[in-house]
Image (tube, rainbow, N blue to C red; front, side, top):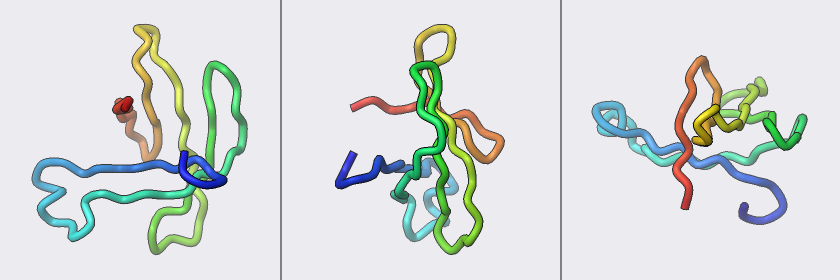
Length: 78
């Protein structure tokens, strides 16, 4: 977390990364509901006016995921 708000960093890989001039993007997250088993935040993607939900959770095996835009993306833990 940098500053006052948690941030989400998205890194595009593969062919998509080659098409985007900014394959690494960072966004501020606005907390909606934070509970031990899952946390829901709102995010405004670049150029967008609408808020979108992002849900963070751990699967049964313990791996952390971020779910948004109909995708479940595995977290990279530093």
